[in-house]
Image (cartoon, rainbow, N blue to C red; front, side, top):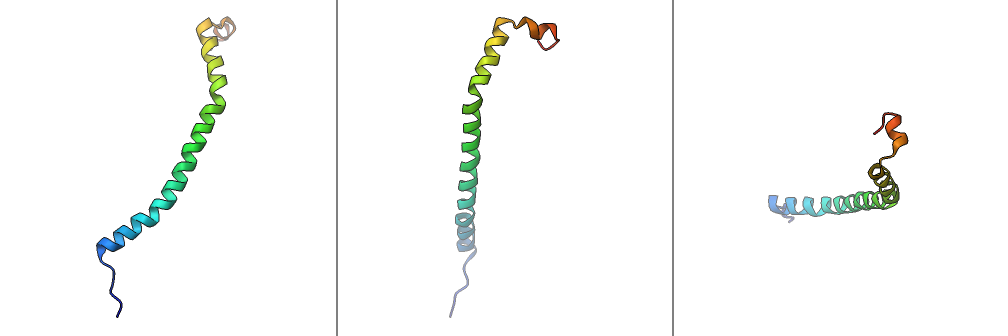
Length: 64
């Protein structure tokens, strides 16, 4: 005779089953965000440096 699983066993199975895709997708998103920040860091430094220096051509065009 097979025993039906209890609510606790069902809940534990669901949490374990859903934990795998959450960890994989979460890791992928975390990695993509990190790679994006790493790849755009030089441009952000360049923009910050220009803003700090005044960038008169941007001010003349109404951007700063």
